[in-house]
Image (tube, rainbow, N blue to C red; front, side):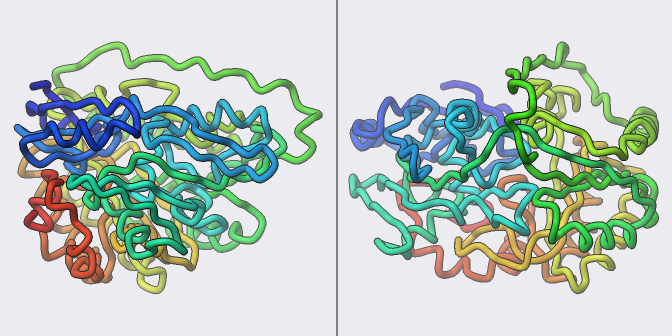
Amino acid sequence: MNKIQSWGRLTNNKHRVISLINSNSVINQINLTSNKGISHGMGRSYGDVALNRNNTIWLTTQLNHFISFNLKTGILQCEAGVILQDIQRSLLPQGWLLPVTPGTQMITVGGAIANDIHGKNHHHFGSFGDHLISIKLVRTNGEVINCSRLENPEWFFATLGGIGLTGVIVEATLQLRAIEGGWIEAETVPYYSLNDFFTLSDQSIADWEHSVSWIDCVQGKEANGLFIRGNFAKQQHQYPHLPTIQDKTFPISPPFSLVNRLSLPLFNFAYFHNNKRKTKTQRLHYEKFFYPLDALQQWNKMYGKKGFYQYQCVVPRHIGQEAIHEMLKVIKKSGEGSFLAVLKTFGDRESGGLLSFPRSGVTLALDFPNRGDKTLKLFNELDRITAEAEGRLYLAKDTRMSRDLFEMGYPRFNEFFKYIDPGISSEMSRRLLGV
């Protein structure tokens, strides 16, 4: 039994770990499991979606092989444990990149599918599932299901965003996008209210593929922020060779959170004022633009031994500004705060996944140090606002939402039940689905 943590480091419980060696032997390895298991990749989900304390996890990181790649069409077939970084770094020199990528590239393809991840370009490219061609799924009874939009589509859309509960994803086929190079032309625009944010967001939809914002959530409803937008640069042959980013590692494991009442206002003030001057267009390495936190490995340790939560919701656009205003007021009143606070709008599209998170609206993501009951009390207030706005929380980030809020936010959950593999269970599935 090994101790396993998610990225939030809220728990550190024992698990029986079975490393899946290759896609052809998965059935035999799963059959060695005497209790229910759940697939587990790089452990970058923040909560309990891929945890299964005192039971089994099937570690997929050795399923890390490319099977085939068509240089003309950009179609990649690979095993589910391939990490996004390997795809990006291997295939960019060939002129191809993933169309959609989240804020970290240190996740597996299987995890990207199971959580139907999204990126900064949802308004142009949708979610990860919009570029997923097919899935090879292994059930714990030995059944192998190949599914796509044309073959077994019901299994395809249950597995997309299905938090690993429909079976073990062992292979996937992806459509990559053609790209000239890896340089991004980006600009940062400071804003001083939510009105400014929504104006900038609307103005950026047509001409900017990527957009996101950092918001200072300790200021209250008239929060300062930095709106960041970017496009892949044109005529990339004129630019220098793209260097390999050298990562650093967070050097310590502090006994307490370095993000606290004393440090947070200073962090946020310095971050805003240091970056608001960068209003000219900058040429950035795509990794610095998409994955700024990946440059500091194990950054999650800065929240101390108690760990941290991430709260991410999406609410419909027509009520989004009002709901976000209310959330910021509640956060300020609570005395809590977040340094890693992200606000962005989603495009007017919704994934076909039965439990997919992205939908038309505005999404707010916030990291909070774990301060026990005080933090959970704040989340209950944020839940109330989310529910009143008919929004939902992101399962990949969650570790404590109620079953009522889950069922309200994911109205197709009843359809999903019939696709759940009876040999699979996780802490999240037991909490939210009772299985």
